[in-house]
Length: 429
Length: 108
Image (tube, rainbow over all chains, first blue to last red; front, side):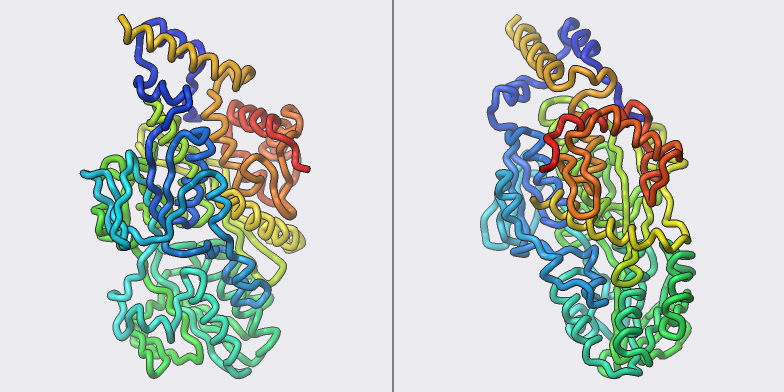
């Protein structure tokens, strides 16, 4: 394992040799004085976790301000169950008051730019917040420019429902009003995108609803990828066993044009697919605040970071988390993973602000997908720092997916809901 | 040498802190231990107190926690998922995780 084995004996040796362990101001933090200022941009899975753990692990000595435009947190994970009808959006909504109890200064505003030279973030309301380090967990922006015929404004008619909240409720309402015998079409973007198994879980949830309430209806899944990108054999076995005659899955079908008025998708092969409900999930990149602050370094889409600290490879003292990062090999863009990024950055900043070297990061991921209202399947992985490659890789031999034995999936469904409640509390309570 | 003296005082303070915080962690310092343990917190809670069907770890015997994680890892205890996660951690890390959660106040 790559855990830094730093013992008390090493520390005494260093001290005896007169090596400065921690800078003097950092030493002063042991006495209880302020340990520096961190501004966290974005209160999603990564940002909320970073804010809470910075307070916890600095013993309240790091001053943390979180800037988030939304008044409450709405979870993307589990939001497909709102479409299936077994959860409400209210059940996925949590207030930011728990973070305030940890001493996080939660500001509901929008950051216009992160100015690393002046070490401040500027706010849409006009003010500025100074920082020693900034943590940016900006989430994603949709690349509607990659499809003809549609812009973000048209998402009011053809929802993405890939950021939970009003969009989720809109798609649910559209499903509610289609007739029995209606057609729903989901367009899945080419990877990488947020939440790899998400589109396939969504297919299960919509099919579950149609099967129960409108059994003559159809769900067409147009996948730009050559195959199901996550838990493929499991999803395909569910579709065959539970949703035969409802789900029509088509791989290598990239939607290149959307006819908003005519309610139809046009694909790379020139096929035209009409639907009563169209769910277009666009390709994605790091959000605008990352672009406007010079943090996007890969393919005009993602932010590369040094995985030891999650600091931007380009902008010093600015750390980037979550889906916006240029993922390490086989590291999924998931909420669970963003939470683990939040802890890694909090641990690193606490050490850095005390003049110490952060220990190498270690991260675990678990993504549950509900295949109906009760049964769930998972994919899990463990990621560690590989010094010779200067990146994170999966620990060989660890990780995996659910077994095909469906008798376990009910239990996994109970764990999945327990996971959701626990991880929301881990971020926000 | 004022600087050196300050450094020595600081080092002593840090050392005292480590001694008091982690008397039994020979190979991973206390900050690294709480960080590695936080890998588990998504499912088992920030201080090891989980919600719903997820098992809590807080306040359980260190030896029991460590042996359960090893049983998952070695395949002697069946699981839906923990056998896959546990394989990602070394013996030293497993002991640090177990020690960390054993110290947390048990769930009510």
